[in-house]
Image 1 (cartoon, rainbow, N blue to C red):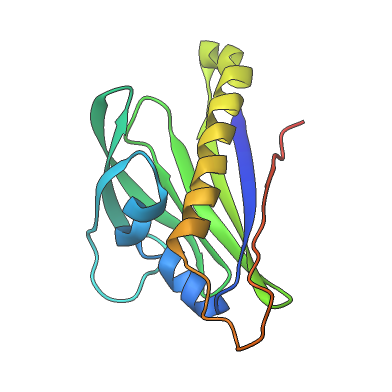
Image 2 (image 1 turned 180 degrees about the horizontal axis):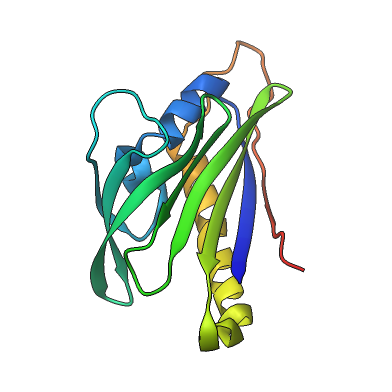
Length: 165
């Protein structure tokens, strides 16, 4: 059983700049609250199958995970998945133009099997809390573009959503 949660935020930055930021795993420290250190294994342009590593802190313990890029569509979608830990999980972002802003949908998925399926409601709640924070941190990590003189805009919004039934 796959548990999937999402959170959406609007960022007033150019679409390519937002995508380049979220698809660079070295930036994860700026918007993944549990990330301690991240590094890419492959050199050159990002592509499906590339590997990267992350050390994360959860409940005071640091764990290391190997991730693989599972989808990469330039200026549209970037997702990764790991089988390294006890509970396989993935994360990523979908990017799309939304008028003068860019809509970023942050995604978190976790596969539950066996008796762990019983934990689905708790896992969904914890993942939703985590992805909501990630979306807010991402918005904060991408400061607004300098407004035009006399421009009163510059607002951004955060609206968490979940695809769970």
